[in-house]
Image 1: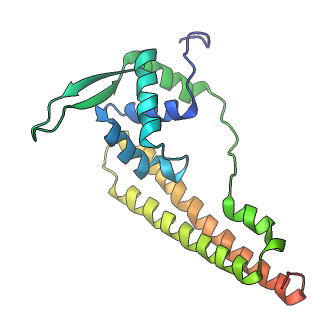
Image 2 (image 1 turned 90 degrees about the vertical axis):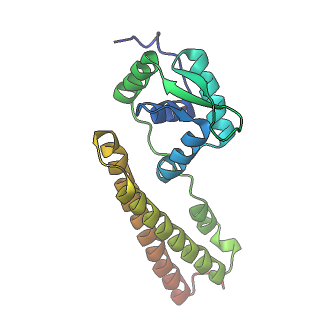
Image 3 (image 1 turned 180 degrees about the vertical axis):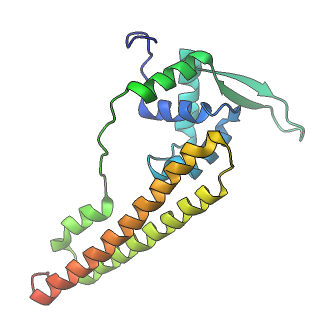
Length: 195
């Protein structure tokens, strides 16, 4: 196994893009964006096209990925597709196996606004929490649909399992927003809320 000094450092987005390539398919930047929108966005973030192409360039420079041009049948310009190299597969395998997990970083806009509730009217807070419930329900349904639509086979077992985690996460997020609505109503009843 390569020691830590042999591994080339990548930012988290680089590891995510390399991870997408680790499933063994030859993918274009557009394909990677579509796949990240259908999977990574539920639990990490979906990188922009510019981030994906920047990371693909970095992965090629480090020797973790290679690319080639593929002629298009429609007469449009050639498409560049990327594939993980053996060195890239070893690096992402080592990263996944040995890198200590970072604690999740909660960056929650609705919670920040709730924290600043003294600056808002109770009706605005209710609207915020209702929108958060609606958002969470939409994400839960999307994760469930993507998990149900995932292809069968061993390569998709863990991405599908991760989508189920995302589905459960967004179900709990919706339940938390509902609980906050109840708490807000309690504040209003006690006359504690700004009104």
